[in-house]
Structure formats: C-alpha cells, structure tokens
Image (cartoon, rainbow, N blue to C red; front, top):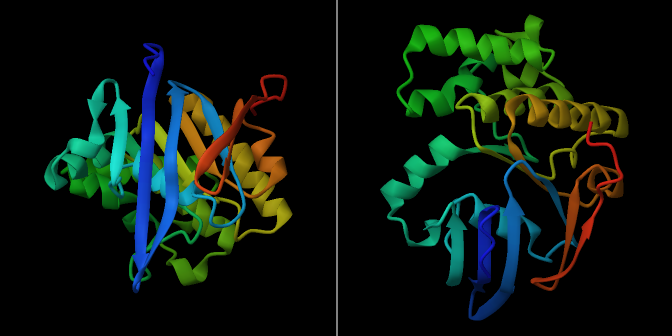
Length: 237
C-alpha cells in the first residue's frame, strides 16, 4: 500500500497478547490508510481490536509485526525515547476512564503533557486556562477530579489532549462513561475542536450515533478490518 495523500499508512499489523499459557490474537493483519484532517471512527464488538489498534497508531504499544508509517516514518521501529518524544509532539489522547491525577486540579492536569515538553510555566498555565475556558470549564480551574462530574472530567481530558497542539487526536470510547446528553455535548465539542485545530480525529466507539458523525467508519471483526464506509453526507459538527 502506498498512498501519498495519507498521514498514516498501516500495513499488515499483527498484535498478540499472552494470557498465562495462552496466546491471544488481537490484530491479525490490519491494513488501512488515514488521511490528514480525517475524522475516522473505528467500530466493532468488545475484543475486536479497536483499542489495541488505537494504542498502536498512537505509539502507546508496539506491534509484533507490520508497519505504521507516519509521513513515511515507521513508528514501530522507533526507540522508546524516540517514541516518547513522538507521542508528546504529535498526539493528544482522550481515554474513556479520563486518567486524571486525583491530587492535581484541572489546570495542573491539563499542563502535564506540556510540562513533559518543557514549556515555560507562565505561558503553559495561561494556555491551560484558555483551553479550559474553551471546553466550558472557566469556573473549574482549581477543582480536583473528585469535585467534577464525569462530563466535566472528560472536558479536562480533552483540554489536556490539546495542550501541545497535536496533529492527531485519539479518543478511545470518549463517551462510553457518559449519559446520552453529556456524550452528545462531548461529541459536539470534539467536532468543533477538530475543525478549529485542523487536526485528524480518530475515535474507537460502540455508539452508532458517534460513528455516524465520522467522515469514514472502519469496522473491525476478530482483529481484521472488514469494511470502511464513507459517511461524507453526515455533518461533522
């Protein structure tokens, strides 16, 4: 596969995990292409490989075989230090479980990736507060996670994902722990921010309503891509 218009090209990706004496095949030869600026949703039942695929695309894990080319660079071949720098510069992660540090307030949680990038602290705090305002948390700067609702915690996680101006936003079931109203608000926000940031948005989801908002929906079954359907008639925001 060689698509010069693609930001990410994946070829024959294989990933297995060992559970005791048993080896579990999660991805069994995934090949796909992701264009710059796309909103691509990955669907499939639990265990189909959605989260594993996103973790590999974002450099949180490494494949057993196959290639993941970002602008021609195979991130599966990077050293751990190179991969860490790559993730910090290129990718913003949004997790279903939020993964906020309980001892930090909202501003401090948003700042974490930029602190790792050694951004000067005064500029960093200003940017973190600006992002929290953008996601509707102007009055929550000094609140810790236990003082926030699930939807508010996810908004903090979105602001954190954007602090380093990532090229790609990766969201693993971003509405999975939210009620339908909060989930709709989060999706409206992600769609708007994707446009504002000119970013590529990759989402793993079980929710048909979330998948319907994507410009392309890719379905995985038993570790293989079975369909990739264009949804270009559906508004993105």
